[in-house]
Image 1 (cartoon, rainbow, N blue to C red):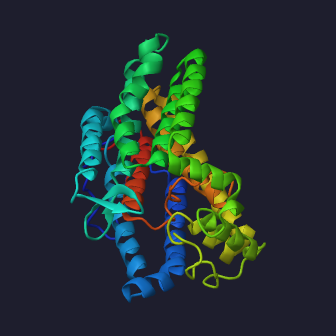
Image 2 (cartoon, rainbow, N blue to C red):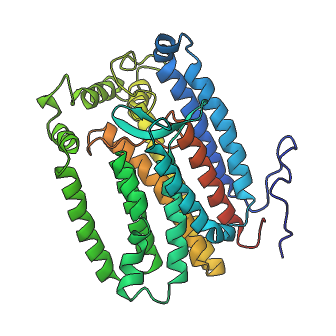
Length: 386
């Protein structure tokens, strides 16, 4: 029997005392990615921050503060018995829906670039869509566990997982935030697959999802424009195709070994969102093919460790919720990383998704590290923590 401890035990010690059962390989991998991200955010944002705020360190200081807060959140989350998240899932989902609704209220939600997705908290802008992604994930993992003996039926097996996410989808599309909506849909589908939903329902879900997604893309002028730009960015090189063309130019300059850390040119007001959604292009230019290969390898290893935690939870404890929770968090973060890389490389249309752990973005980094804390909590087992 594992002795239960307080969530706050060890937090005030220096260095903080890590709880037993931590997956150190995963923790070191994530920590290294965050440290690397801080370096790249500084490199990509210094000139832009100097021009915009008069302080070249403005963005990196905010990111550093959020990173420290994120690791505190990770520490606290990993000390909580992960089975508690199943109990709290309805409240967490309701809170996510409430935050998404607040974004739509004039004066509360902040509008940037035609999208209203943020709530200004001063130090950083909170993006409730990031929180909603994990709220839906936790609730669907709970749902699939509790209905595991009825997944052969149509409603529990196919309808319920997506039905409970409909309010979230509606509010996200109203912002609009199609990228997060698509990521949540993919994660739900992955959980259904891992949870044992019959193949006939998975095939039907895939067909319906593709149809609905196509209608959403073709039925929106700006999404059609993004698709056309993806197919032929040279059709509007100084307009909608400008960002991806500058991204590819930076990657071309990087070659194999890169131009050197800090020596990139595209971040000098050529490449929009250089420190945010397109930071991978700055990595490719300054650190070359070897740099982007190392980043891709780090995400692959993160996915391997996370899925292994989920598999071990099932293998040792036969705990379906723990397996789905760990796998869902892993896929939500890992797949988003590869989607971001694919966007920067021009392999998929622009989605507006950040590169987890690396891109500039306060709420994304804070919530992502908290989710990793939950993942580390699963690694500790169902009898650890409080």
